[in-house]
Length: 295
Length: 65
Image (tube, rainbow over all chains, first blue to last red; front, side, top):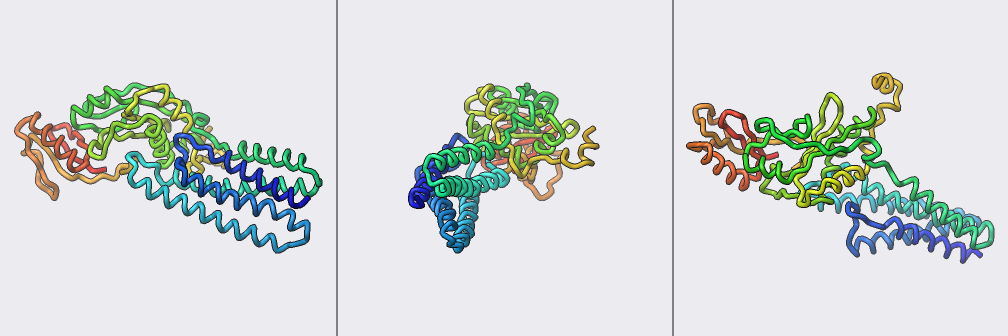
């Protein structure tokens, strides 16, 4: 029975990794070699997770040391992801920024632990009950749980995203009543008014105000908007760079983007789906003083 | 280039009011009128990869962010 426990554990672990590998417009990797790397490491994670309970049941306690060894490898994955993303980021027109990269790298490390957990639960249940079905069910449940737990919040949850008009007062560009920047060249002003989209993000509470104030979070927002809608800027037209500025009094954030495809609905949708970065998550309301200040 | 961060330095000044600008460590270009000023600023902005900001008195500063 222990053989089928291990086999089943590896299988479900691999399926879990494959499921978590689904990539959308902002996720990395998006090319075959990235897939191969993560599938291979996921398979290793699944194998270790599947073998562990069987080994422990056979009173082979040395197996625990292998778990720590593998954990070491997973940290290596985080470093690998971080470094490769950082290097690519240098040549992005609109960067992800270090906060976003750290978030992505962390996700990649965590996914391997989840794979290990799924394999471990599957293998343990199979070995303990001596039948395959309970193992399959437990593994699938663990997979679903992992998917739900790691879903993470999005900007749409912590703020209202609304369209707002772009206009100039003298040389100053405003979105709604939030000042964004000073634009000198009349031609650039025309370009921004003609193609630009304005958004205002209105935070729902004090935590959301803190999150939106985080520069890394705003950079992630601009990066995602650009990834979805494209941009008209190039290295030599600095004025068309997307920009997010906050209104210090209310915590609202005004955004201008000059996209290749000016589609307002798509912009609103993309902004709402930007992940709330762990590094930026506001926690003011978790403290007593913070709650009092928010009254 | 961090789009959300202001970390700029002045790479050039373009003006059609030369009496209002003193040379001080960065090149100053004088246009004879508004259209010449715009032409100079456009070219400089592109080659220096800088954004043009209006000081409001006939003077533009080109800032690399």
